[in-house]
Length: 409
Image 1 (cartoon, one colour):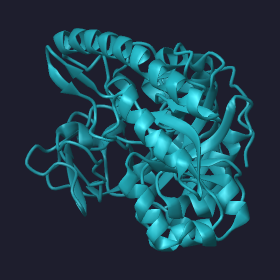
Image 2 (spheres, rainbow, N blue to C red):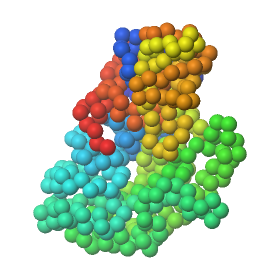
Image 3 (cartoon, one colour):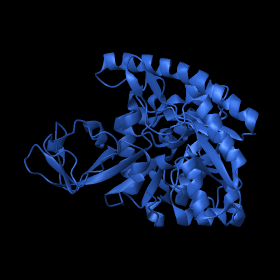
Image 4 (cartoon, rainbow, N blue to C red):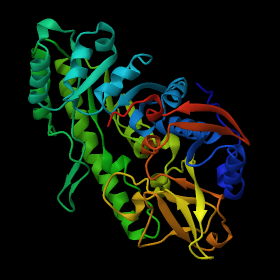
């Protein structure tokens, strides 16, 4: 672990100092490699706590995928527990972390058997359900009489079905109403071998949609209106569901929100914790918010290997494309040196990425270019480790999931 003390300066606000310092610290490394600025990571972690206004933050592991970073963040007061993305990942993390909620339903039979036959794992890990069919699947894998009680979290859909603009959000749980939630909750409570311990509802249209997209002022205003309206609807609906389910059984937690909605979600009195993780690394997808500005804590470096013309420079690699709707914003952002851009017909390529722009002419083979991934945790799937940098030196190295030989999804 590393100590994430709140920094007193913000060097990333001066790019011509920040990126060269990263380069000096990592000059002995051969690209491709990734680095995390410890002060920037610490700033982001403390800023998220301030934005959460005292509500506990559960670390969303898919947005990090570096066990050492997750454990370092969990050492800070105000953070507790992990929101995992697969059951296999949760079982692995449960070796050292004692409170893990799997954020998505599972059909991993081997992992379910492992969970159900271990008293320790069954106590530390909670699975997600949104239908009776998922309960049936667990029972089919291992009968209640032959297993430990399975901790269950019920997922409430948090999307907004607007009369004006239609469905907004992501298609997750089919449970939307108080009546639907009570019906499923009653089924969970009445079935042997299950314990209903929590409710989760992820408002993606609020937490994951930027409200100040560059060059799109009108869209930003529309997003502001959508998020205000959507949250007002969810505030009433979620509180009603939570109240009804609490009358049926005790709940240990009610989880909501994400990095982009910490302020709003923390104002919901029915929510006891917020899941967030992307804000720790500060990928470029999160640059377009009006109410917070994460530091670019994580980045990766690639080498210039050729000059197809004197005015251009070509990187080896670069096609680390993010998931989501195919669009230019899914490509890595060229962070340093400034004044670089991809070639429209090639973009960020699997093995080469030609660049143009004012800075390209000055680059020579062997020079390095810093890039930021669109998303946070997906960067960890491309490298085996992160160099942790403070000032002009590497202070630690931490393995990614990939570096530890894990590929969960």
